[in-house]
Length: 424
Ligand code: LRH
Ligand code: MN
Image 1 (cartoon, rainbow, N blue to C red):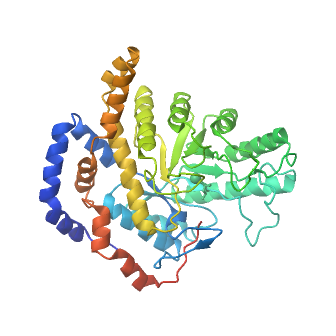
Image 2: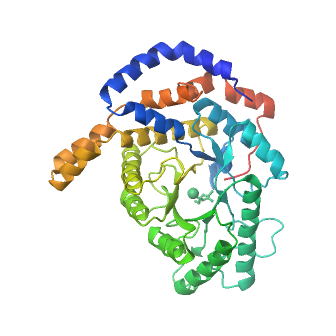
Image 3: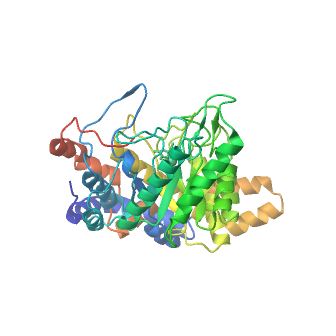
């Protein structure tokens, strides 16, 4: 299903008066609103190819119908999101869930929808039907050298797919670890994993990045071999300048101070990118900003401060990706909500009065520091996000238009109710 420019323009015209009133108020309240709008227009968030269908848990999965049946239909769906918000200009593929049979055709189809290919993701956390050796006891950490080699070869294969699609980064998330004390020699597991990552690193083209994604637990429940930011930083530092850490918001132990982790990884020049989502208990992969919007703001607050300190290009120098699973919401509506929450957190962080905050911090004026931070978080920036979408050719209210156009109903008519997308 494609959404024509004229449909979006008609919708915006019908809602322009209300939008203009809200925008006038916001620009009267927010000093640098024009600069913020421009930075929002440039800011693109990659959509995960594995989260365009209904997600599930071991207890059940309740598909909502009209799910994409192929990589082509997944690209169409991300194209639809991008048409609505003009902030979803990239897709992140997961191999082998989304192997491009004809890379050129796939690349051209994506270009028609204004999409690029962000990081490609390897998968050594499942055994594929045609796989010789099992990853039951891990991949790069495995005590069996042949299994480690199989995992290295897979990652090099994934890099090849990425090169054909014009991607320039590889995300390696390893489920490797152990479930019981005594099961694993932690030092040997680390050394085997580092050795494997070094072989994969050596296969990277000169302009590529490798993102080492850490996670505290699941599917292993005693130890994880890339278990936290410190371990990921250790690997990335030992690997070389093309290796970075990747922060998935759901991969931390309860009450971890993720914004402090982000600040320090950025300071070290070893922060590669994000998998945005939200969670209350474990790796719940819920809508970004749905549970802890203040934490998402605080993370962007550290990002803006740290990226400015290093003169980084906000839109290009880090990997902005969503990683979510939609168990009860329409996958496309959930992704539209996540993108909007991320854009709002970024806009609020850009509105922070940094000079005043620095003065208050240097005076240990704790109350003033909180006032400045929370004032930005309590500033309604939705009109700025809508204006950025409008200027870029998107809809003033992407979910509003998605529903008005009965997109899901049309996708079900087109694809049927029982279609299941590959992925989580
Ligand atoms: C692991 C993870 C990783 C992906 C997978 C789909 O929990 O966050 O980024 O490979 O989800
Ligand atoms: Mn992730």
